[in-house]
Each structure stands twice: as C-alpha cells, then as structure tokens.
Length: 225
View 1 (cartoon, rainbow, N blue to C red):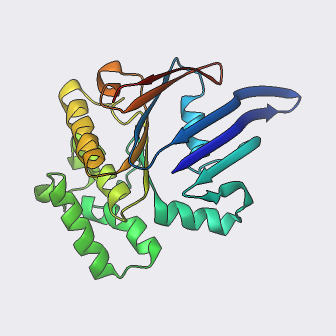
View 2: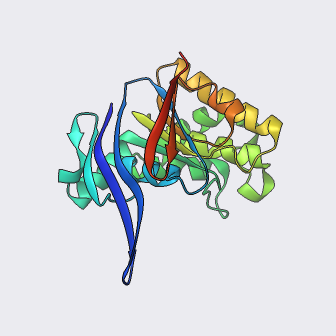
View 3: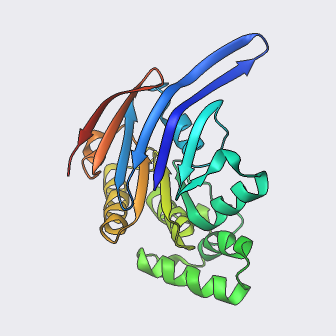
C-alpha cells in the first residue's frame, strides 16, 4: 500500500539548512496499522506529512497504491488526497461555523457528490461512530472527544484507502483518548490501513507494528502482531 525509498526532507531558511528526515525506507502493507513514535523533533509528523502528500520531500520516492506520487502533477496529487487518503489531526481541524454533519460533508462535496447524498452519507458516518444525537451541533458545542470523532467521520466518509492520524489523542483526556483508539481498532479490524503518529505507548500497543524515529532516521522497529 505504501512504499517509501530513501526519503529526505530538509527545511531551508536563508542560508540555514535543517535536515529533518535523513533517508527513510519504509513499507506498509494493505490493512496494516502502523505506529510512528519518537521524541519531539524526531521527524514523526514530517514523515506523515510527506507520505500523506501534504508536503513535498526534498528527495526520495513515495509510492501509494502502486502510484509514484513524485511523478504526479499538483492536480493529480490533490485528486489522490481527496479520493484515496483520509486525515485526522490533533487539533481536529473542524470549521467552527459548520455543524458536525456539515463538517463531515466537506470532502464528499469536493469529490462531486450531491448535497443530499453527501448529507445522507455523513449522517450515517456520525451514527456509526455514536454521534447521531450531535449531527446539528457545532464544534463549540462538542467535547474534545466528540470533535475528534467528527474529524474521524469526515476522514472516513469517502472510504479512503489509507487513514493518516497525527497525534489524534494528544488533546484528549484518558477516557476520550481510549475511545478514539478503540474506534481506530474497529476500523482496522474491518481492513482499514492506518498510519498513526503518537507519543503514547498505551495507545501504540494497538498497532500491528511500530517504527521509532530518532534524528530523522528509523532506529528501531517492533512488530506486535
């Protein structure tokens, strides 16, 4: 599902170069739940942003679902993000003026679904994650855990091949964080490929495999299942 070859990322500011990723090689199998761990500044989120096509690497190769993403046009990358990839962020990234169902509808509308079809799919997704009673609430009326569930519903509404999650439990209390990980586990059990950045060992144990980053390199790998 994912093949990464000699991936590097260096940020440049005037005359200063800061290497963040230093030659990453990584394969992720279809249906795998991969955890990415490491200390702050190790390159975890940067790696996920490159694989998730939210940024361009400095060098290297990223192949998603047999497609070489570095040979794609900007439009082709955008279309892949919309149709094949889903994203969950630690700050939820919901639009405060929109209701829960309207937030979930956004990627479907961008994909070309009609408003009525987008609404029907979104309501079903919110029901699936236990928020049928919150469809008309705006983010400010929801708890942190509920907001994160809405963001997961939004990420999953278009049935992505790969779900990327960047510290999805970082801003949540223990109970809410656990409920989010349980939701990921349910998605994974149904065959969803998931790549999750986390710093919490108690949640990483649900992953099939964990890679540990240090100074932009993979220094250790642990297979758990």
